[in-house]
Picture 1 (cartoon, rainbow, N blue to C red):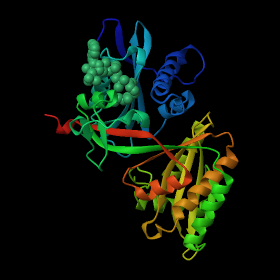
Picture 2: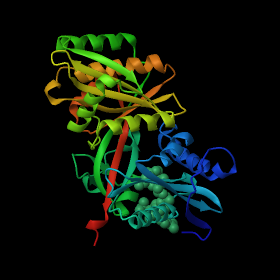
Picture 3: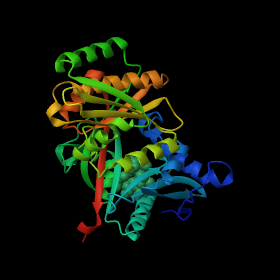
Length: 363
Ligand SMILES: CC(C)(COP(=O)(O)OP(=O)(O)OC[C@H]1O[C@@H](n2cnc3c(N)ncnc32)[C@H](O)[C@@H]1OP(=O)(O)O)[C@@H](O)C(=O)NCCC(=O)NCCS
């Protein structure tokens, strides 16, 4: 690394006002510029408010390292250390400005993050790389592809990010599809898809919707669904209970995040059999994110997922008419959810690679 560069831990400010927040805001801007460079837009960038709230999340300790060149912040690593579940691992988000790339800074910041993580007795580091669809079109020969440990996904070593993670000793765990949909969804299409779903399941399900706070009536049911199943939009089930549901809702409210949920009730049993949620980050309403979708196995194949997803999209458009894009991530092997998304008009935006380094496995 060059002489005029340094890495240090960022002091997290109490508020975003004043001189004490200047470095924090600059680190947020570095991340925004890196996303702008990768995607051609900053829709996937965190707002400063969202990141500040993340730094005060009671379930996750969030540490930021910054890299300076000639005193100016040109790179950063966000280190998320879960405090409740998954206490053996840490997620690291690494960003180096394109103007500072290729000088060993990324490697140094990652090494500093790993040192920090190991000092906290964590055994596993997880990092992500992002690849717009256009950058993956030219299929590289087999020997230049990294094969994911789970599923059948691959990433080409011609990708600078994939090469970076690979040569830093990370193993490609899985590759997720990443799709986007331009809103508004046509009213005609929404009506057609809803009619199709109702015809498939013979109107055997009722849809219930809410914003931000789950009604008392359904809270126990949502917890049961979260506990019992993996998610159809990816992710791992965690130990979940009513207190956690309410705490998560309170935390979202603090960050300004808004959440829309549509759930399906089986009219025969009166039980919820699935739900889907969409969120909007604090302080920006132009972009929305499709969060998890769960449909219990016995109710799959009846267009329940399609029904609640369309209903939730309609709720989103009613509540936030300014939203222009919605993003979703799926495992490439989740053909059920991919087919639902195709019907809604989602198109592939790219893939996300999830990589991990297990210090226990290192000699
Ligand atoms: C991936 C990323 C962090 C790399 O940052 P960087 O500062 O360019 O990384 P480095 O300079 O340490 O390493 C990049 C390459 O430069 C090479 N390099 C290292 N020191 C060098 C030096 N002094 N001179 C020239 N090249 C050097 C490295 O060997 C590496 O080559 P490789 O890709 O063939 O392995 C950066 O491009 C980025 O922010 N990308 C977008 C976000 C992202 O994907 N983050 C997750 C990464 S896991």
